[in-house]
Image (cartoon, rainbow, N blue to C red):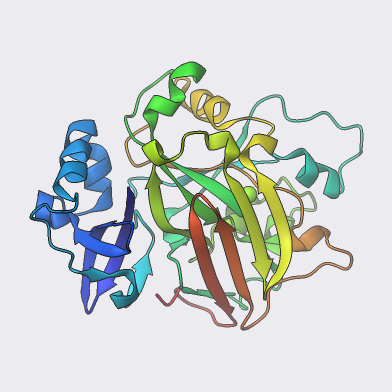
Length: 302
Ligand code: MG
C-alpha cells in the first residue's frame, strides 16, 4: 500500500494510492489525514487494506494525474523531522575531513522543522536573500508507526510504518557560516521547502528488505548520486533504536537517514542549484520525487 496527501481542486485529501494510481480517500474510513492513519495503528491499517481491495465499496476519487498538487505525505507532523548526518562512508570521504578521521561511533542527529517539508512537484524556493549555495542530498525517509521508548534494534522494523524518498536540501554557506561544517547544521538545513518528501509513503509490508532500497538522484537528467540503504554506516534499525533511547518516538515521526557521495558541495568545482534546475530522486521501491528549484524568496509553490 502507498499513502499520499493530494490536492484535488481546492480540497486537501489524504489518500491510499492503488497499484493502478487510483486514489481512495482515507475519509472513507473516518480518517482526516495520513498522520491520523499512522496514529490509529495496525487494526485500522488492516481495515483500510481490506476496504480498498478491488471489488470493495470504496470508490476511487480520482487518479494521481487528477491531483492538482501532491503535498508531503504527512504535511503536519507533530514535530521536527529527525535527520542523520555523516551516515555514508562515501559522503564522509568526499568531504574535507582527514582521511583517517574516525567514522561516527553513533548516529549524528540533527533536525529540520516541519515547515521545511514540501511535496513532489513543488517549486522549491532558492531563498536568494538568505543563501547562494543550495545543494541536494537524496535520502531514504523512515516513518515511525508504533512509537516507543528504548526500542531494541531487533524490534525496530516492527515500529516502522513505511518509507519514502527525501531531499535534505542544504544551504551550504549557512551550514558552514561558523567556519566549520558542523556549527550551523540546523539553520543551513531548515529553510522553507527544503525537505521535499514523497511522492508517497510506501507501507513497510511492501518492503521485504529495507537494506535493499536503491536510490538515484539526477540534476537536469545528469546522475549525481547513486546508493543503497545497505551502504549506511548506521542501519535504519540502529538509527531508530538509538533515537529512542530515553526519548519516546511517536507515530508519524519522520527520520531522514543520510546521504551518499555526489553532493554539489564536493564536486570539483562545486555545483549549486540555480533557477529552473530539476532535481529528480528515484527508487525502484519508492517511486520518483521531482522538484524544480526557483530563484525566489518565500514559500514553496505546490
Ligand atoms: Mg543529509
